[in-house]
Length: 109
Image 1 (cartoon, rainbow, N blue to C red):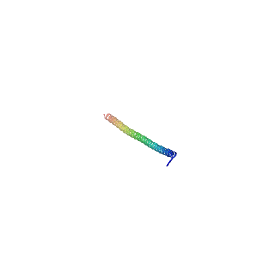
Image 2 (image 1 turned 90 degrees about the vertical axis):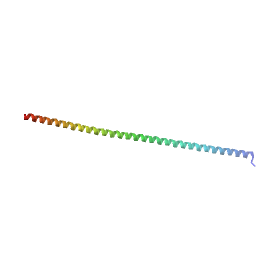
Image 3 (image 1 turned 45 degrees about the vertical axis):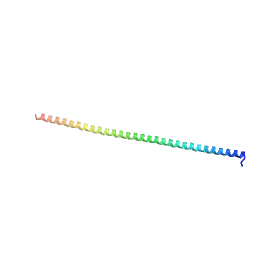
Image 4 (image 1 turned 135 degrees about the vertical axis):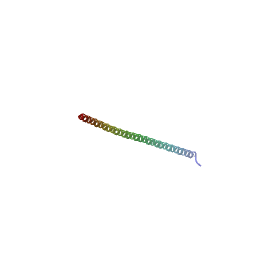
């Protein structure tokens, strides 16, 4: 049989063991929660990076579209200028031709 002293010692050791097990479990849960928080934080950072990349890509696409539009407008303006220049030349040729014909008529008279 155990003496009272031995029983107290066993009770104390049992309490220490239980307390240690509870503390260990609490540490484990805390570490697990911290790990989950860290994973969540990493996920959020990845999402932010994805959003930044999407925004950057969108800006680049819009910029390229603007450049293409500007080139198209410049080409259209250039074609219009060529048409106007040709029209002016045709007008000048027509006017010179009319003047030459008028001079010929006057000479004939």
